[in-house]
Amino acid sequence: MDPTGTPAGTAPTTDRLIGSARADVLGKLRRQIDGAEAIIGNVEHERAKRRR
Image (cartoon, rainbow, N blue to C red; front, top):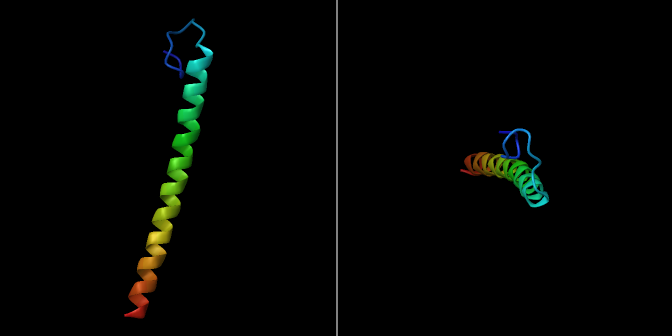
């Protein structure tokens, strides 16, 4: 199978390419958002510790 999930030697459909690209882009964005949220959470936690 190739990266788009089609058997080797066959052309993926436009819909399959769009879906695969969308999943790839959204997956990368989700990881970036998750990372940013983790950083913000750590900063807030450290700030709260210093105020105690």
